[in-house]
Amino acid sequence: MNWFILSLITIFFWSGSDFFSKLGSPASDKFSHWKMVIAVGLVMGLHAAYMLIFGGETVTLRDFIVYMPASACYILSMIIGYAGLRYIELSISSPVCNSSGAVSAILCAIFLGQSMLGYQLIGVVLITAGIIALQGVDIHLDDERKAADPKYIRSAKAIIYPLLYCAIDGIGTFADAWLLDGHIEEGPANIAYELTFLAMAVFAVVYVKLIKKQRLYGGGSEAIKKIEAPKFLAAISETAGQFAYIYALSANAILSAPLISAYCVLSMVWSRIFLKERLTRSQYAAIAVAVAGIIILGFGDA
Image 1: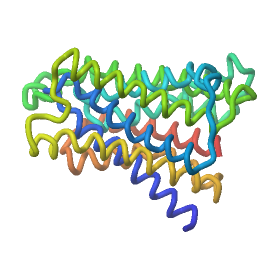
Image 2 (image 1 turned 180 degrees about the horizontal axis):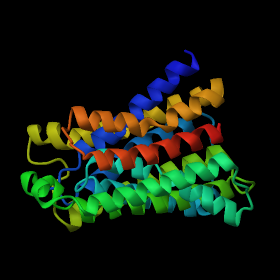
Image 3 (image 1 turned 90 degrees about the vertical axis):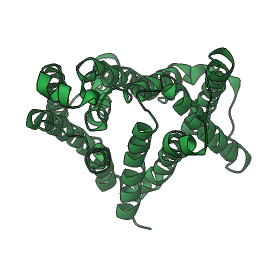
């Protein structure tokens, strides 16, 4: 299978992860983000077990400790991102969250002494401008639109969720770059992250089921099908996309990396077609600016 097909598979699954996460995050369920953590942690734990048993990977207590800063940032950002999906359109959340690369680029330039080339600076500026513009547009959504559709009532306030995701995930990526530069190998780091996520899933089960006395899978088969099942489809999509991503990069990194970096565009397509999300022209323009910055950084990384 060539790099182009693998890249398309990655885009499809990662955008699917966004889409199914949104489906599994109804505004009526205030514990939906913890249930997403359970689903993702379970799938990651199974993958980690497979790599340890059949993949020849090893992990030590030191690996868990060393990689904890990155693991903590990644997991916290994902929890915040899942919580935010209850209140905001996926077509806004996805591109803002994917702008975390700008945060990590700035941190690496400041603290790791890495230089930022001209096109990288342009990409960071475009992403930052798009986020600021999107926040401004979202806050000033007209009252008539909010009244016509209740799902937009909290959108102005809910923009803080993807912004927090963007910042924390960017810090996590910066920590990742620092730790992988001689402090820990990629294999043990990935296993440590997945098993840490599994531990968080166990915590989520205890919190939701035993402390809050909530059902983990709704009240019946229809609830499972419509609300809970998408959480596991999102977790599986995330893992499948990661698997294809590794092979796409190894086959042709210079072309596959920028192609994959814009998967949030497909997330927006799914949200428009299946979720019937409607955005203003100003919101589309702001998102387009941010996506342009993401693509520029993608080419730069390649």
